[in-house]
Image (tube, rainbow, N blue to C red):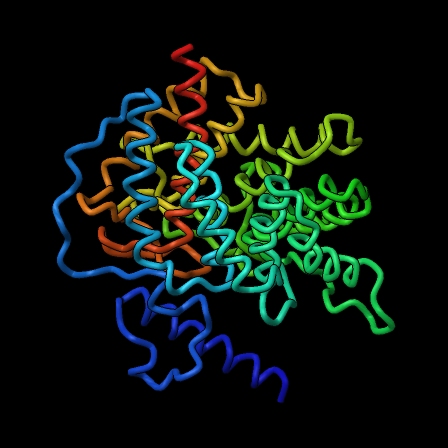
Length: 395
C-alpha cells in the first residue's frame, strides 16, 4: 500500500510538471491543493512573446551590468510581491534579490525580503522536512548579518538544533540530501548559520551530509552530478550520461554559497575548493557557442534552446570563483563574459528573462518565453558577481 501511494504521488507530480510546463492551469485538471512549486506565481510561458530588449549592453562595465540586473529584478518583483511563499522556488529568487541590492545599491529588493521574512515570522518551510524547506533560511541569515536582530535566526536555529540533537523524538530528517538540487537549498544556510552563531556543529553537519550526497551522485570522471540515483545508469540518445543543467547549476552555486561562509582554516575547505574547481573546469569545457548551456549537458544537439536557470547559475559560480581567486582570471573571465552576453540576449523589453525550464527533475524542453522565479534568482546572482568582476576590471 505504501508503494502504491508513493507511485500515485510521483504520477501526480509528473502530471503537474507537464501541466505547468505547458502553461496550463493545474486547478482546471482537478488539482485543487496545488503544491507551492506549481503555483502560477512561480512562472509561466506565454505563447505570444514581447519584443526582446534593445536597451541592454553586454559590456563588462558596472553601469551596463547593473542596468540589466535592475530591469529583470524590477519586472520580477512587481509580478510576485503579493505572492511570496517559503517554497524553494521563491527562496532561490530571494537569494537573488539580496544580491541585487548589494550590486545595484538599491535597498528596495532587500527591503522586500525583510518584509517577506516578517510576514512568515522568520520561519522555515511550513512543513519543514527536507532541504527545500531550508532554502528560505539563507535569506533570514543574510538579513541577520545586515541588521543583527537575533529574532531573524531564532527559528532557523531552533529547527537546525532539532535536526542535530532531537527533542525527545528522533530527528525528522534522515539522509536529507539525496538529490543534487538539495546542495543549493540547504548547505549555504547551514554554513551561514555556523558563521552567525560561531557554532562549528552546523558546519560539521553540512560537511558530513554534503560528502554523503557527493559520494552517491558525483561522477569522478565527468566532474558533474547526477540529479539523483535514478540517473546513474541512464543515458542520452547519443550514449552519454545524463547530467541535468539546472541540477549541476544548483550544485556549483551551492558550493560558491557555502564557501562564502566557510572559514579559511576549516579543515575540509580544500576538499570543497577542489570539487568547485573540478566542476568549473567541466562546465567551462562544454559551454555552447552562444555562451549558454543546454538542459542535457552532454547531449546539447537534442535541445535547440539554451536553459537559462542552469546557465545563470554557472555564470554566477564561475564569476564568483574569479572574484575570490579560486579560478584563473585570464581563463575564466572570457567564459563569464560570453555567458553574460548570452543571458542578456534572452531578456524581453519588459524585463522578462526567458528560456528557463519549468519545475522539473530532469532535462526537458520549453518555450523561449518560459520564465520562472528560481531562474531569475540565478540571473540576479550572476549579475551581482559579473558586476563585481566588472568593477575589478575597470579599477
